Image 1 (spheres, rainbow, N blue to C red):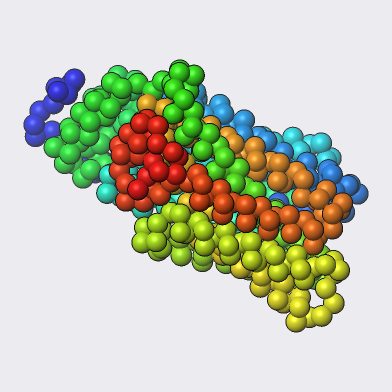
Image 2: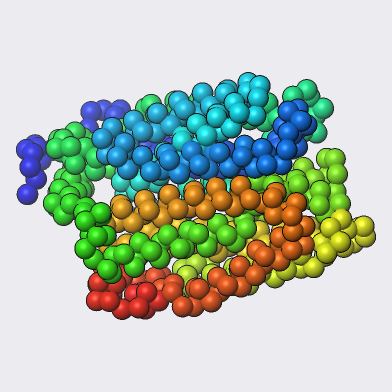
Amino acid sequence: MNQFTLKDNAQPPAGRQISIALVALLASLAGLLFGLDIGVISGATDLIKAEFATTDRHIENIVSSMMFGAAIGALGCGWASSALGRNRCLIVSAIIFILSAFGCAFAYSVMQLMFWRFILGIAVGIASTTAPLYIAEIAPEEKRGAMISSYQLMITIGIFVAFLSDTLFGTSGINHAWRWMLGIIAIPAALFLLGVLVLPNSPRWLVMKGRSKEAYNILLQLRSGNTEIARQEVADIEEQIKKPQHGLSLFVSNANFRRSVGLGIVLQIVQQFTGMNVVMYYAPRIFEAMGYTGDAKLWFTALVGLVNVAATFIAIGVVDRLGRKPTLYIGFCVMAFGLGIVSYLMRNDVITDPTLQYLCVCMLLVFIVGFAMSAGPLIWTICSEIQPLKGRDFGIAASTVTNWVANFIVGNTFLTLLNNLGSSKTFLLYAALNILFIIFTFCFVPETSGVTLEKIESNLMEGKPLRKIGR
Ligand code: BGC
């Protein structure tokens, strides 16, 4: 029964209907910002290194301080999004996005740049955790999947736009181009702020705070004034929140839950150790190691971003038809193959034959396709599918924080590996890890496509081996 009274013919006030497309726009902007901030640093590192006459170790710290901030942002976000509300969290993150874009653009020392990248990371951590949660809570059931995958797609579009903008600034001959690259992000961040300011509270959060009447009014506006649907959704939410989340105590008391949390954590480590972000953060440096200099390495980086976007469509197209595990197998094989050939071609570090140079670029693109069609979107999906309802928030938070920590480690070690092992052995190492992940997928990853979340949960709790908790 609803805990509030309504007139059966209650209608939203005229002109107060909220288009669900506006919610989609928010989704796009949060994902876009996330992607922009991942991508933007790659084109700037050479210029920063020259301006501050600094070392590769400092560059690694500048790059990865953002991921460190993101881990902390994601960690604090569970508490903040429940205490302050989802949209206030997004407003806070938008303000931090704007401030830190200016902070980075006007940094005059390595330490300052590291500090502002860290602050920027906190915004990324908050937005990357809150936005999908908010969208899932506000979108109608039948549009939920599509809205979450469009969010993933927007991340890759953000990365591409950042690569392109870096290329345009980097080839323009403008002074202090890196400051423009990092500062320009204040513009989409300001648009994001305007967007989140007009958006309504999450109905689920309102019900959790005992404000069911307000939740009903918002749902009425979001569901084209359909009183029946709005009333039912409020009743459903009230029913659901009667089963409170006990993530931590479940984790301590239940070994089966510890298994699913462990799997989520390892899956995110796997995603990062494919080596994808090595290319996202250091692509121009990689093209330099292939023998390209000047503008070419920036244009190739933009191409990497474009291929990443295009291949994400493959994942959207095949994942439900092929299933999660076959798609992951193909992805890891393609990644291992691409990086294996890159490693082989780079045995003498700089390649002098133009044909082999092109081949090397193509193989790096093959690697990108492998990631974007598989581990990129799929790991996020599986991590949200394997957790039992009572511990879902805890399980997803644990794997998301791990994603950022692993991301930090990868970003913070690549140049050191390159300088110590050389490019060929570094890529060989990542190729070998991808082969290892095929075995990991076979042994531990369940096939979750076409299986209800309830079935996965009951299999897990019955103690079935992890790879058998799905189909
Ligand atoms: C990963 C990010 C990565 C992006 C690249 C995401 O799924 O979590 O770390 O930068 O894909 O497209």
